[in-house]
Image (tube, rainbow, N blue to C red; front, top):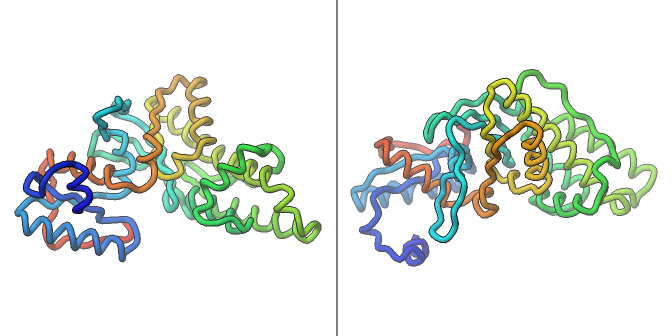
Length: 279
């Protein structure tokens, strides 16, 4: 907090409200944030503003920077929210009005990246590492299962299991299979995950008629996902919005901008608010 105030060049007396993440997330981290926010709110007699972490990822599109003009989506827009624990399609009607129209029924896309990376012996988090190797590989080198899930929901557990068994069988034939095929494995896996995500995004856009498309969440930093969405935009006449790389992963600015909109609407939290690992 001291560091944030120094960088902003302000004093704590200048602060009108304190926003914090209520959830979802790791309980230990949430407890620290909630406890500090309550103490700061009480000591300064300023409003307490609870934030849903996932909504904050989407509202990261409305962060403003003094030295750079950033594009902001027009309402309503369709958000593809992809992170380590969540894969959702959300219609955003207003700053604080969200309608989930598609959700993962098991694993999320980010989780599939990380678990498949672990199978290949890569470090955590696996998504950025796979993205890096994939740039040097052939996305059609190997074929992996794509789930047949109804409506606009997602599933990645089947892909993860298919990948596990594929690697297991190939290693029986050749102990150096992963090492000799790492680029192609990463590229083919990434292509499959991105295709699953964008197929449903196209379907959602067609069903809703919404052509304002926004990416959000940590996996929005994936270069292949960004490129694929931009290619789809040319076919479907979309207007695509991708947050700055800095604002795709977890950051304080997205919590602050969400708290700002809640402050304007006087949506204050009570002091009995508790963190929720799952929301």
